[in-house]
Length: 441
Ligand SMILES: [Zn+2]
Image 1 (cartoon, rainbow, N blue to C red):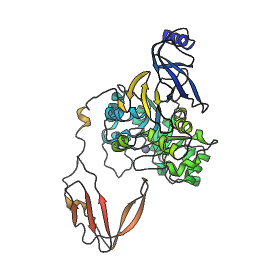
Image 2 (cartoon, helix red, strand yellow):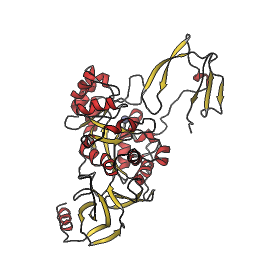
Image 3 (tube, rainbow, N blue to C red):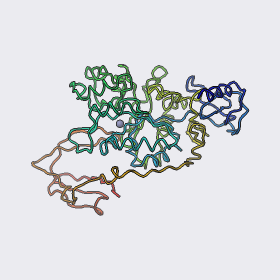
């Protein structure tokens, strides 16, 4: 260890050759917002220096392309991709995501701590840094029939795991405001670590109370005014752009020269289809640039801001001592990622992963989907009167509205085409609407 450090210092001083030099680069400096020309010297997975370096085992001429830090996804549930962690890494690493902060509450809902351990073990073999937030709300509500319940004692255990950096989104804001013992115990257990929030529509004194409990961030604002309240009261605002929840357009005007250090980009939930066609955190950066944000500023919100908020050691910048998790970009505004380096090793090129890793899940983690026999009768709403309460989906958001809807008479008339796929068309006495059912295969 000592000798490695001494050697890194010698490489930085230019006295010893680096392992790799990425030469003729335009380096995105996330500290100053500048773009500097220079060579990046890498030794043992770390950056030794940026500047006038020439001696190395290997020199790669980037011919004027840009180098930026690997992107950091500051809040995501990788299970929402519907991919195993290995496949997930193959999808996101070529997109430049080299670190993610994940709250594994989806797998924890099904398999508890064993499921989380499985993901963490697999991640060790993959070219990305995975940081865990201990899931604070498993199950998310008492109305769920979950496979596990994480009580404060389990959270105490998870918070001690290597790679666990804090308490995941405290979705139970009514519990915080009502002084629920279990939720407050979890927050107290995470003292000294990062505690993420989840407070859709919480405003005024309720918001003050929620923040006073020790919750540092939020990713649920859907309006500029709501996000401004949270920003003013000291919250780190995560601008979320997922598959079904899109807040970038509403919140981006809040990002100014004065405020930008208090924002970071996250995806929360992205489907594998969107990862493939649109991308991961890179897609959010790209969209922000299209909406007029300076490209370097957009990269700051996906790198150094996330690293500083989560206190990620030596991540999020291209600078001496930092891990050499880097992306090489051909065209900066379109964030066209040519190469991806993880700890100095080329792990993806032109959108293709150069690694493979697969670990089959243990028995206890498979065959966990248990449903009762299902038929079309199950789709019939149980109408009891003229109207019935329904959950209305808000396009582009995950918040929902409660609505009273005319009862369906007769209930369901067509199912097109076969079972579990296509659309159910139900004709009521005064309304017709379509309910899409995702194909299950
Ligand atoms: Zn979330």
